[in-house]
Image (tube, rainbow, N blue to C red; front, side):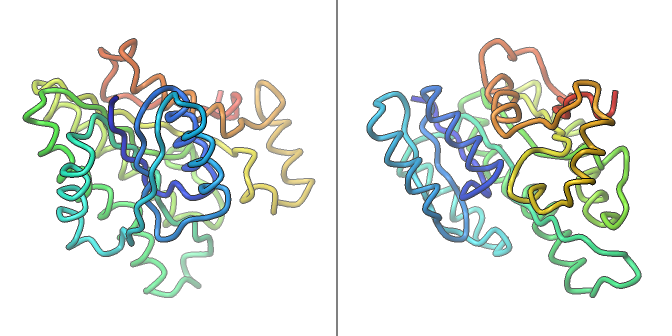
Length: 244
């Protein structure tokens, strides 16, 4: 059974991705600061299904010095990682002129520094296997921009550059590196948007609807599949045609 590490997997997109991958037969290690009822339910369902497996490990990804220790422990317990999905991130919004420096620092550390250093530790473990998949969760705002999300957009754009360059570095080792860029996805976060804003997003989309968590999870599942063995250094956009 192939091992997949998914960060930020206690809710939202991360939980959806972890659930889909365990259902596809992977052994998923969900990383988050704390568990949630939704994650606990998903772990139980995965256990009963007999297809894949879903485990939870509590870890604060802002504690970057302990990331090598985390990966080493997971490798000893579960074996070599086949894939890493860098999903964890802060979505703090606000006008740049009004944001506190500690907010900017936290966004940059969790959205850029942490996934880079975690990937470094995981890639080292993949090298001996001469195979592996890395998926970085970006966003369409990395290229389109969005009012009040300048810092967040910058961090997501940084992941795209990281994805393309790392793909060239580790490609000779049989490791693929790709990004997924969701648009406005129908989650708890967008549920807080005013109905008028949600309708505006739908009207701007070619398919006149918002993408769902399952759509994003399916994209990640594809990039981890054998069918995507020659797909690397690319960004897969899942936004119902919002940027078409």
